Every structure is written in C-alpha cells, then in structure tokens.
Image (cartoon, rainbow, N blue to C red; front, top):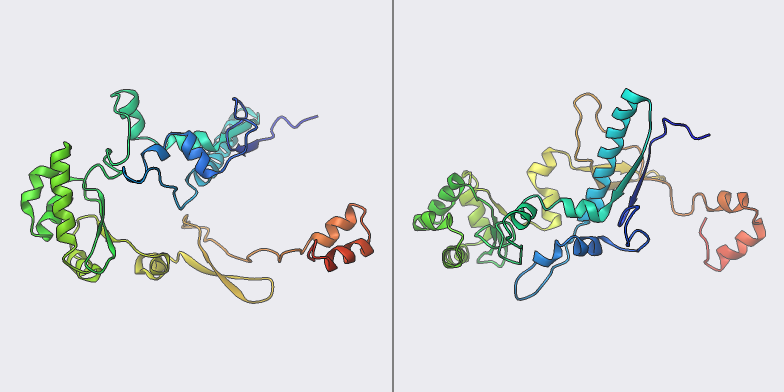
Length: 281
C-alpha cells in the first residue's frame, strides 16, 4: 500500500498535463515558449539567449517551495500529495511586470520597449576603455544623483517620460557622458553616491569583489583525493545552522563496478569494457 503521508515531486519541462507533457526541451526552449525571449536582446539583433538557466533554477526553487507547502499541509491533515512543477510554467510566472501590462493594459512587450529591457535609460553604457557601466536608478532620487554626477541635471525632467523622443534624448546624452571616462574613473565618482550605478564585471572580477568576498560566496571544498576545489557557496545563510561543505562528491566511476556487478555482469566483461574505454572505474 502507498503511504498516504508520502510527498513526491516531479520537475519537468512542460509538466504532467498538456500537449507538450512528453516533449523534450532545454532552458532556452522554455523561455521561448513562455514568451520571454521575444523581448530580450536588441531590436536590430533579435532574441538573445540568456547565459544563465533561468527556467531551470526557478523551477528548482518552486519545487522546494511546493514541497515545503505540502509538508505544512501534511502537518495539518496527515495527507501527502504530488507536487507538479513545470519549468515552462516557472519561466512564465517570472513576468510579474510585463504580464499585467500585457493582460490588462494591452501593452505587448517587445525588445527595447519596456522599462527593464532597454526601453528606458535603465541599461549598460560603454566607457572610454571599452568597459561597461550598469545604470539602474529608476527612482527619482537615484536618477537625480546620477544626473548631477555626470553634470547633466537637465536630463532629470526628461527621465520620467517614456515617449520615444525623451528616451532617445536621455540615452544618447548618457552614452556620450559615460564614454568620456574609464570604468575606474566612473567607479571612483560613484563610490560615495547612491545612484544604483555599478560596473559590469567579468566573472573573475566578481570573484574578487569585496562584497562577494565578505559574504564568503566562494568556498574551498575537500575533494576525494585530499585536495580542495573552489566552488560557489550557497546564497542562503543561517544564523543558527552555518552551512557545511564536506566534499565535492565522488570521483567519476566510483560506483560503476559495484553497480554493474550487482546487475549480473562479470569481472571479465568489466575489464574488457574498461580497456575499450566504454566504462570508467
């Protein structure tokens, strides 16, 4: 008999119902089906694949949330349940700003037309040394600080307008201003200013950033051979139960031999397959 308290979860590309329930896919496909890729990138270049697994990671987070919700339900009722998570649904649900505008206001999102996808000054701008500065001060107090820092206070009244002429004027002015100094020079200018302006760092630079280092977001984890391997730490930090990183995992092929022997294969077969490069153990 099935334990009625059992909680189990399936995380799939398209979920347990629908015409795509058995269809293969990857993160890019889920973002495409969810309508997100259509308004990424630039107008002249078309959709841009994201360098992170947005749907996959979000689906995993939703799975944890769903399982924990099911645990609470079980605590009250004694009943377990099945938790069905679709990565496409997960991606679709991320459109918290664009969906209401489209569904209620009939403002269909397109590349470089939205507040967050390049349709305003909220964007990245090239510096004199061919680096980039991210400018995200959408709120009036942040943009005022930014505009004064680049000596363009005349842009302040234009920044609250979303018509094409005003947006183009503001972005062109910012582009020209930012191109006059190097990234390091802009960092020095904005370091004491609350304007939501930060450098676009490489991954290597991000690893060395004092904020991430102070949060200990890189950890050295023991390996099976006695060395250590640097990995990204968990972003969740607990006051009472500090995270522990005990090992990186077993070496490739560690369980190959025992698993195949348990399935009835012989030592001789395994040795032959190893010599042929078919298996590793």
